Length: 288
Image (cartoon, rainbow, N blue to C red):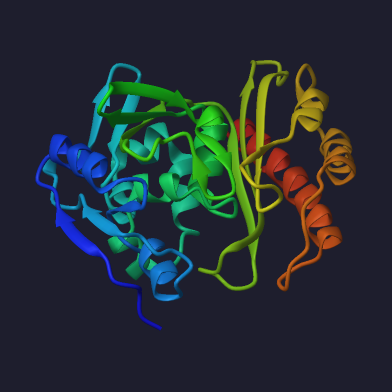
């Protein structure tokens, strides 16, 4: 199929992009890499009245260290984030998750901010941003604001970005505690059936002081496993504790069924991945 007719605008600056969003109205869409938007347009699942291309705005691409965080411009290609040496050191979970995003050709065109703004509940980047406590920078006609990742994802394919606003950057805090990213997909490059991003803070005695377990593919947004986190915090991660966290996950998560997997399968897989992620994360800690 082909998309329905639309206007095309190529913005040269962030200010121009915001002005075009205001002028074109709520039916306009922002185009960056197009790896998610264009297929949905071809299937006529999305029928925007106008596309505002921001790929040529130089100031929206690149990775820079600012204070205690890495600022990733919204139009930075996923492949560039994956290859960046500072990301590998300060946000290694991001690099690990990106290896699961589509295939190399997709990552060469897809943008880091685009994955966040698309807000697919089965996508890797949204879950990782919530687990890491990232912040997202949004610019619009009313000025600039920053939204924590935990508040950014509102519902299925819906974020806190207003129709006349633009995601301009993602701030990744430097977190050097134990972490793990696990995912199950039918084939590598397919959308995840379920996955988990785990980020922990562990003291010298191995006691967990903080724990973020964020699941993807089980809810309309990245799902923070609060009950399982409470099981882990204040304790040392052992195989027994990891199994207890797994049981809590399987009893609390309520994913939907679809043609790819049943709710029962997703619940079981989520528990298995959480158990695996906890042991892998603390295994990294023990190895130094």
